[in-house]
Length: 39
Image (cartoon, rainbow, N blue to C red; front, side, top):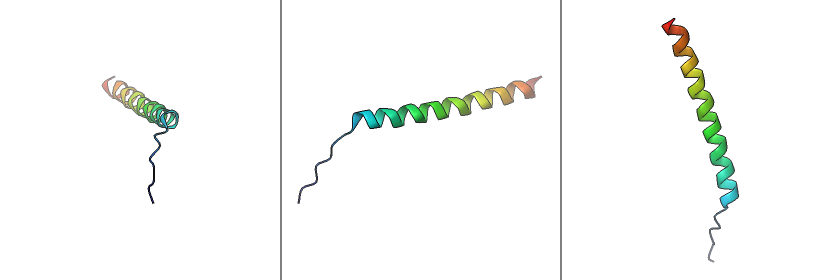
């Protein structure tokens, strides 16, 4: 039995965008924390 791997590009791009948004929010939170600390 051969299982064909079908690459779902649209799904992959959606997942990627979600990960990027999550990372951007974390970076913004870190920047704000650093700005508060430096004052």
